[in-house]
Image 1: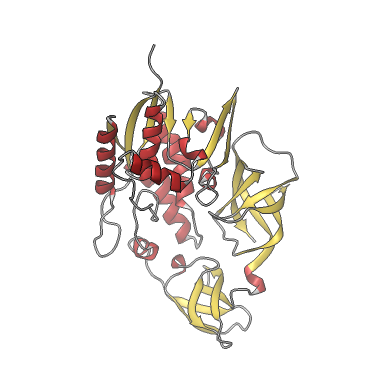
Image 2: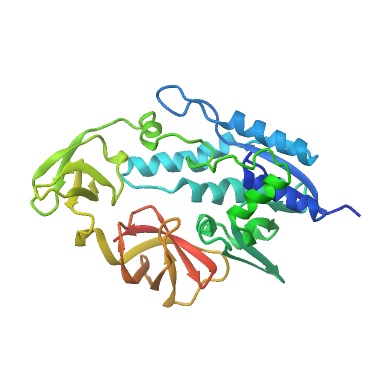
Length: 355
C-alpha cells in the first residue's frame, strides 16, 4: 500500500520549509513543488522578480530534507486570473487584494487540482487551521493572532480544501523560526515576503506605472469644494490614504473618494474626519466555505488583514449584502474583501461595493 504522499507548496521561505519538515517527521512521503507564477522585470528601473533566488532557496531546503522538488509553471494562469483582475480593478479606480485572489485561483484551484493527481494530500505554510470531519471541511483562525492568515483564505471553498493540510495552524511564528534553526533549515532567518503575491517586493506605484498611464487631475476638498492640489492618477491612490497636501487648518488630507468621470481625488482634512468612517456598507458576490448562513445573522467581520475582528449584523438584500457594524469602520474600500467569522471559524466573504 502506498505511503500517504503529500505535495507541499514550497516558496523558499521558512514557513513552507518547516511545513515540509514536519510532514516528513510524521511519516508522509513528501514531494516539494515550487510554483513559478511570474518572471521578468517588475519595476521601471529594470528590477527583476525574485523567483530565481526563491527557487534556489527551495532547492537548498529540499536537499537538506532529502525530498524531491519539482517546479511547476503557472505563469499563463496567473496572468489570466490574478494579474488581469489586479490591473482591471485599479483601472476602474478600485483597490483589489491580489493575495486573496491568488489563493482562490492559483494555490487552491490550479495547484491543488494538479497536486492531487500525484498525491493524496496538499500542504501549504499558511497560519490557519483546517479540520476534516466526515464530509465537512472547516477553516479556523491560526493560533498566532499576530500571524493568522485565515483572512487570505476567505475566497476558498470547502471542496478546494478537502485534501489540504495546514501544519503551522497551531504554531507561532517565533516557534517556527526557532524550530527551523534547530533543524538546520537554511532559510530559518529569511525575512517574510512583503510584496505582491508571487511578484516580489516592489513599490506598488512603480509596478503599476509600468501598465497604467499616469493621468494627473485635481485634488478636491470634500468640505470646501476647493481644489487643493494635483494627483498623479487615480489608480495610484486608495481610500483612507494620506495625501501630501496640507489643509488650511494644518491637518493632512486623507482620501475618501475617487471620481473617475471627473478624474478628481476627493479628500478630507484630518485622520479622524467623520466622512472617513461608517457603520454600514454594502457587499456583493458572497462566497461561503460551507453552507450558506440564514439571514440576518450576527458575526465578526474583518475588512483587512490584521484588523481586530468587528461585531456586525449581516442582512441579505436583492442587490447583495448589507453589513452593519457595532463600531464605526474607517476607510471602507470598494473591491476589498469582507470576511465573516463565527468565533474563530471562517464562514466566507463578499466583495465590498460601497459604504
